[in-house]
Image (cartoon, rainbow, N blue to C red):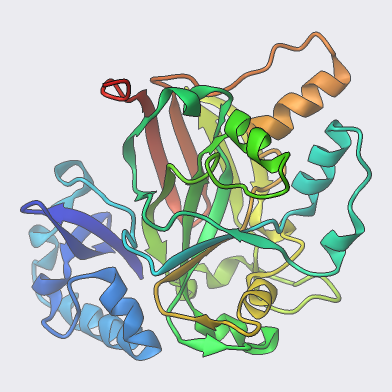
Length: 328
């Protein structure tokens, strides 16, 4: 299934995607909740009911005429009100290259356990415009990622069982204000202000049954499902980043095991993958300057358009704007 949240009469409404059209949950069946968070709280049983009701709906003659075109609606994030948002650091290429660009050796602890930080689960956005403060544009960066949503409560979850706690997966663009980030991390805390202003998800949350054909072998020594999904990012139609989800060093299952150690995960929690290799300007600028010290750094500017595409997960497009009321 592909799950979206869109605005209907000014309120957030859960929708399901069929043949490139969006159908509100209340049109399909009164057994399906009207919000993604409520659906996540129903767990696997809720997803099964939704799938069953969707299949019944598709047997109705002419159902296609009732759907909404994407051009007619405004999308929110698939899960606009998560219960928490953790972001991991799971791609070795990104970590290793970023450290090399700073003249640092690879940190051995990366291979010992998956690490993550808590971001702002109240700053969640979907496709479309994103308004930012002036200081955010001091080395503003995109980050090409994906994220999963938890739909089963659990504590001390073992990696071997952890994939059963995941509802689905979606594209994540985790905007970063690099200057703010570097300032605060000199104090050995953070990232916080460099990360807490905008994280964009979408266009939809995809359940893993739709991605079965992309499943691939997990690297020896690791536990959990792996999917070979191509990840790409354009800024103003210039292709800057290319990678694959299969290059994650730590699986989502292993990240869940770490995150749930002594802590309860709840339906509606979001966990990001971290940045894929080449998936941000910080890494790209660093690599280019290491090869050519005269390279002119590129950062996001007001009115830039960022488009991210992941196989099977659709396309997430955002345009960043300077908040004209920011100095008032």
